[in-house]
Image 1 (cartoon, rainbow, N blue to C red):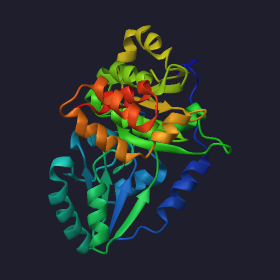
Image 2: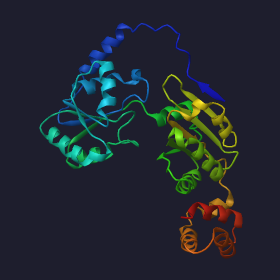
Image 3: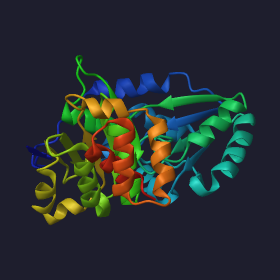
Length: 316
């Protein structure tokens, strides 16, 4: 089943006077100086910036941004004129030093990434760590998150099965991606990861090979944007769904692999068996996958097919 974003022809509701009163209450809250404000920003819809997050950006002495051009669009939309400095993956150490100097001088610094929560598969984590190590204050301003939005929209977490694991971005090479998927997909929890549009087809093919055709997956693309789309289906159905519309190879994806119904006995036996992996890795340096699987099956008593599939994902 696929869910699309609603149409945009609904009339806009009038903002109640309580909205302004709430804004005044937020203004009167504690806004410490010498603190790093870690602010979540919209993942697509500019209206998702929280009132408190907007106030943090407006009250900061400087905004440390992953991409100042992207952040400028957000600031202009909300009428925020705070100056910016650059803080991205390639200058994170230097940015952390400059930010700590500002904090020690009593300034407020707001840290943002291009979209979503800084430090969650986005730059910012090292800066936050450095500020903590310097003994300075870090204040989180929660808000938009693609991971949480996808979990909310798919219903994979319940009171009976609340677990999920966020695995970040999938590796770019197929062999590494399958090893990575095999590691996370056997856990008794939903697996959530990000994938780029130009790799989503290859990633789903690898996921099908690793998790099997009946495992359920939810695909969320363009979250909070005009062409938002969310589909839940089996991995066997996923390639056809993707190919049914050329637009589906556009827009960033959040992939939610549902928790396994039951971990197969052989996978449970293999899970955590680092010794078997070490043997196979050593043999794969000089032997074929087929021969490695045959020898490992004879040594362990496990299925040759199971060990063949495992060796195939470990072959360098």
